[in-house]
Amino acid sequence: MTHQFASYVAIGDSFTEGVGDELPDGRLRGWADQVALGLALASPAPVGYANLAIRGRLLGPIAGGQLEAAVALRPELMSINGGGNDIMRPKVSLESITDQLLAAVDTATASGIHVLLLSGGDPSKHLPFGSVMATRGERLAQSVQSRLPKNNVTFVNNWADQELAKLQYWSVDKLHLNARGHARVASNVLSALHIPVPDFVAGEGPADDARPRTAAYWREYVLPWIGRRLTGRSSGDNRAPKSATLQPVVVEGR
Image (cartoon, rainbow, N blue to C red):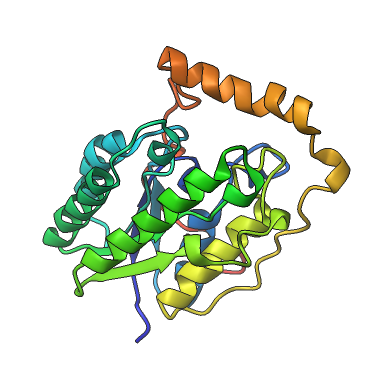
């Protein structure tokens, strides 16, 4: 059954903010923006869209402040993603993450909102210590899916998408999707909602010679990430959402 939604709010971290899918003018696009476009193209009426996601966020602030602000906007559709930053911590409770995600789903659905709950793509094959992350991500997706309510929820398991796990869908840092990866996630989501998938123009992934060698990769990406974790900092510190209120989705030609 095709869903029609007049308003959509996205909450989450860098995955939902759109990091890795930078436009020529420096703005971020990402899968959520493309899903909003797909909703607008399929709707005869205007569609409002807000994106409250902020990079680096753990699940706690997503399922807390972001969720509260999103519910207050009273959207018809809300996408929820979180826990990716949590499972990269040395110690993590997958049961706690599952509980938080399902509580967020319950809060949204209790307000009459259709929830799109989705996992991120699996970057573990290309990351240091990726095997631990792979096991955690798979267990988390399975745990969430097994306990999801059946009504008013659509679940999209991007973690299980083996095509998306290929390096060609990932940015130079190997942790964030590139434009091609974000386009694939948007296609996965719209297909799950039974909404026609636009012909997304995602371009090519980074060339192999653009990816730093092992020592440079650790110096440019891994060590700064570890440093932020040790000092309690985040790449999203002092950042505001890119769209905190519902704004009409612009469709060219309308």
